[in-house]
Image 1 (cartoon, helix red, strand yellow):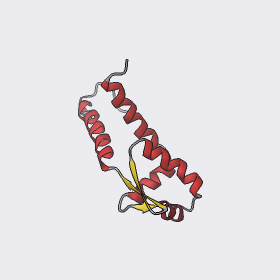
Image 2 (cartoon, helix red, strand yellow):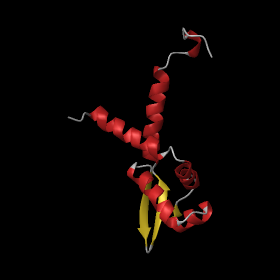
Image 3 (spheres, helix red, strand yellow):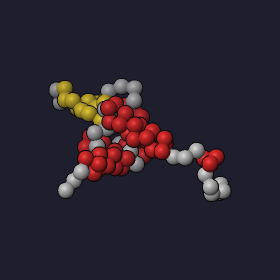
Amino acid sequence: MATALDKRSDAILARFKALSDPLRLEVIELLRSQELCVCDLCDRMNIAQSKLSFHLKILREAGLIAARQEGRWIYYRLNPTEFGELATYLSDLHHLSPPSSSHPCPPF
């Protein structure tokens, strides 16, 4: 039986996996400032559309980007809500960590 925590963990894991590829991080960086069509992404990244489509699919399935179709073109944009959830997750982990000065093990 899946719990709410399992579902949240699966979603967080999918987002981190999606962000673990340099090409997908480049897509994220390009979309930071504006929505772009797939043709613009291909041109700016100097990549074939077939290869880019694979990476865009992973980012969409992870919820990190959204798409809309206008005529024959598909435009992509960041989904800030999902990035906010990742930031909250990391912030929660950060607050759980003990201060480094009180750590009993010596530094490396």
